[in-house]
Image (cartoon, rainbow, N blue to C red; front, side):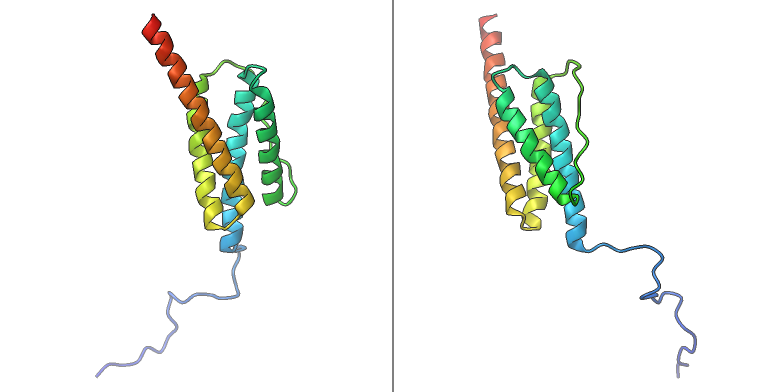
Amino acid sequence: MYEPIRTKSVHSTMAGTSDFPHRTREEELDIQLASHLAALLAVTDELRAQAPSTDLDDLDAAAERLARQVARLRGGRPPARVTSTGPTRTAALHRRAHALAGRALVVAASRADTAAAILAAERMDAHAAALATATSATGTLAATA
């Protein structure tokens, strides 16, 4: 009733004759995690540029830990660092850093990278605390004004 197909399908895969390299899931997750941590490092560097000297030690330590993790995930290549000193809004930077740390935490958890997951969770906590402090200070200033 039906005649069998005698030609090769145009939809067949060409296994082994790929013109471009393929990465494993682990390699893709490494790249994604390194990107999230590098973005978090950039925000941390911006915060360092405008932080009061009392908060600088914590931000310096966090920036160095982030830089080490990014370098580890990128095979030893150090990340680019932000050196901006322009005025920015601190609360917005803390919100951005908190979101970036959350993304890094999700990727680190999916690839079972404990060191990166702990670092991302610590940074989330630090930025949440900084936001709470900034919010309470703003609320106090608004109430007294």
